[in-house]
Amino acid sequence: MIVEHQIKNLFITIVTLTVMTLVAFVYYHFGFNRTLDPVHNDNFSLRVNTDQDHNGLTTGKLTYTDSGALLLTCNVSHAYKNPFCEVSFDYKPKPGMDPYLDLSKYDEVAFDVIYSGVSKPKSRFIIRNHNEQYSVEDDLQSDKFNIFEFNTVQHNSESPLSLNYLYVPKWWFDYYHHPITLTAVDISQSVSIEIGTEEFVADGISTFEIRSIEFRGKWLPLAVYQRIIIVVWIVTLFAYLIWYVIKILKTLRAEKETIVHLQSHLSMLQTEVSIDPLTRLRNRRGLEPLFQTVEQLAQHNHHVSVGVMDIDYFKKINDTHGHAIGDDVLRQFSQNLIDTGRDKDILIRWGGEEFVIIKVGCSLAQAEVFFNQLRTSMKAQTWPHGLDVTFSTGVVEISNEFVESAIERADALLYQAKLAGRDRVITQ
Image (cartoon, rainbow, N blue to C red; front, side, top):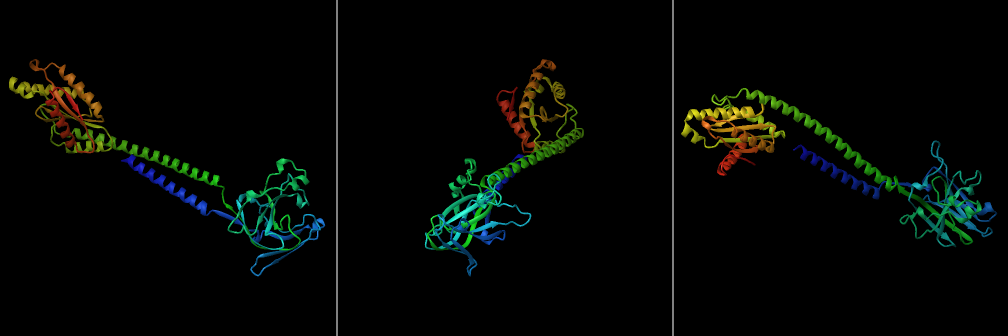
């Protein structure tokens, strides 16, 4: 019963963990999102960046639309061979915050940008990253350029672009003569986010209505999230195992105390039952309290076996040699039971030449060995008038039943032993 209850608890625990895991993965897929939009974030300052710093003639102007969107208006001139015009969102964190922005925590970026002008509807997107290995003080261009260009019509807020599309332009690491080890994309210490004209922009007016630039990602990478779930499983099951062991130990301790108490009570009851004057064994009167204690021991998983014995051809002994000799045989038979049995065995004269032995703490296999040894011992006895005295036995182990029911089952086996030729032990 205890094991079945614990198996049920373990099943409930595993089902609960499974459901929680499924819910966690569904939540991870549809939620658990982090976002960042520099257009609507107070930790960024805005500036327009054009090729005028390189003696170009391109101009740029930043205003706001009635709806609150940023409006970058560029007048592009090819006075500089690679003209450009862009708005830069420079990261300016509040005191106490990390001085750099780790954009590697995000997976993709969604643009809500509307282009109009003489060029194709394309825009260049740049993330500049600071690192002491390559960044030079007072040289903004030394911060690593991580860029890609995209079509503003094809890629909007509903069709984000993976940050894996970013690359480092060749001119940057050629200009600073960086080794190949510094040419990989790095956005873990970002200092600015820029968006503006494409590389091959045409002369003339280009405008960008920038409604949002939303970085999207999960609060934790999937691998870390999975590891946390695995740890939760391991910790929960390990905690359950510890709880189960403690529970079993407590149960076993309580069972042991109960059994000790019942055995003590059984010993006390054995002194109180009626004694048969002829055999000095217990008789059938007043056995109910004794049987109840035996049943409780069996219910606490304590082995209890019952043997019903009958002296073979005893009526013939009485008819041939008289009742006095028959009584002598009963006395000697009973004394042999007393000498062979254990102190905690319950020996009962059930009636006439029929005896019941209740062996507490004895399995069916052990009881079968005992009764066969007893049968051999009886045969070796010297009996009155040189008689050969044997007996037949039916043996059962008490399950979830009354002692009387077990005795009835053993008695049925005894009957089978007699039909099979007597002088034998039959078990069930």
